[in-house]
Image 1 (cartoon, rainbow, N blue to C red):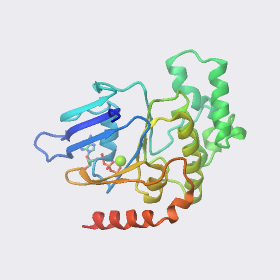
Image 2: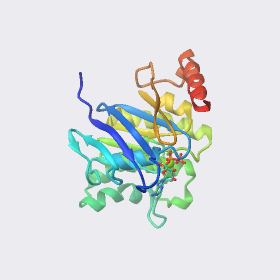
Image 3: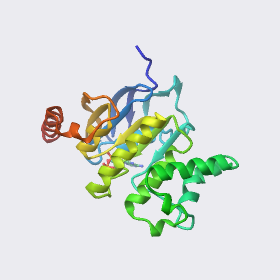
Image 4: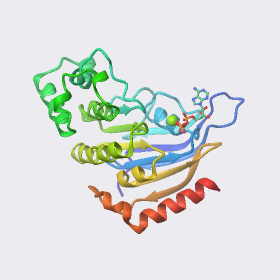
Length: 250
Ligand SMILES: Nc1ncnc2c1ncn2[C@@H]1O[C@H](COP(=O)(O)OP(=O)(O)OP(=O)(O)O)[C@@H](O)[C@H]1O
Ligand SMILES: [Mg+2]
C-alpha cells in the first residue's frame, strides 16, 4: 500500500486553553497526487485545517507530517489559493503571476514564457498586460490559480477559491483547473461549500461536523480523472448529495 504523503494524526486545536476545542481528534491520510475536498458548515474549522497543513498555525496537540517530516514551520513546497484572488493592483497580470517566483530568485526568460503559456491555457492571453482592475472576478481567480501552479508545487491548498463566482464561470474554471491539475499532478486540499464542485473535482470528500470540528463522513468519488461534467447526472452523485444533506441537517 502507498505510504501517506500528508498525514494528520489526532489533531486537536484550541485557541485558548480555557475554551472548548475548535478541532478534535482529526486524523487523515492523504496519498501523493490525491485531490481531497473538505466540506462543512461555516466555522467548523476548514480554514484552520489548511493553515495547520501549511505550517501557518500550530495544532494544540497531534502531529502533521508531509513526506514523513513533521510540519513545524511554513512549508516551502506548497501553494495556497485564498478565497479572494489577492492580486497587487499596481502590477500587471503577468507580473502578478511571476511575483512569488521573483521573490524566491532571479526570473529567467523561461519563467516568463511558462507563465504566458499557462495564462494562455486558461484563456488569458489578451489580459497579460492588463491590471487587475481591468479584469473580471473570474479572470482574477484564473490568475490566482496560474500563480499558485507556476512553480509546480507538490501541494496545492485552495480555500473556497470560486465562492464569489457565478455558476457559469465556476463551471468553466472547474474544467480548466482539472486540466492544469492533470498536467502538474499536485496533491490538493480543497475547501468548498459547493457539493457539485466537490464531486466533480475530488477523489475523496471529507464532511466535517462542527463544535468541535471532526470528520462526520468520508466519500470516495467512483470515477477516475480526468472527468466529464456528465458525472453529475450519475445516480452516485444524487446518492452522495442526499446522504450529505441528511448528515448536515441531523
Ligand atoms: N485566531 C483565532 N482566534 C480565535 N478563534 C478563531 C481564530 N481563528 C478561527 N477561530 C475560530 O475557529 C473556528 C473555526 O474557524 P475557521 O476559520 O477554521 O472555520 P471555517 O470552517 O473555515 O469557516 P468558514 O466556512 O466560515 O470559512 C471558528 O469558530 C472561528 O471563530
Ligand atoms: Mg474558512
